[in-house]
Length: 158
Image (cartoon, rainbow, N blue to C red; front, side, top):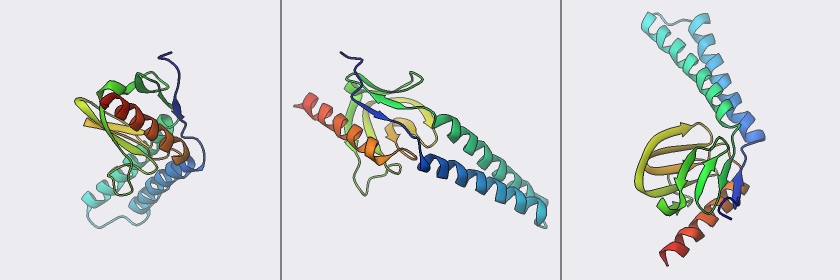
């Protein structure tokens, strides 16, 4: 019963394509600018080349990370590779308000204990006691997941 999936987030579709496409476009334009109209100072050209390469690397990392799905069970929030984002018993609060510091179409979790830093661009990140889910994820899947987690936390605290 603990392995029953209560909610799932699958970042497929136009938001994923647009996110990856924007990073590819940015990287390509910056590299184009660095080579076609190089700045007078070589350090600026090196900076532009570095930023272009970083943008292309980020596009690749986002493309790889958004092939994963997120699963919520009674026990934990995990991704399709088996990596545990957060244990449900360790979650203190869920924040998905309009003015919350959160990714697009997503939510943030506050944990009791800090966890190791981790990041999957466009899908989730974890820093200390904060876990954020969202980016290129569909809001129609992330909202119910956040609501289910909020109900589980409220039920546990009652």
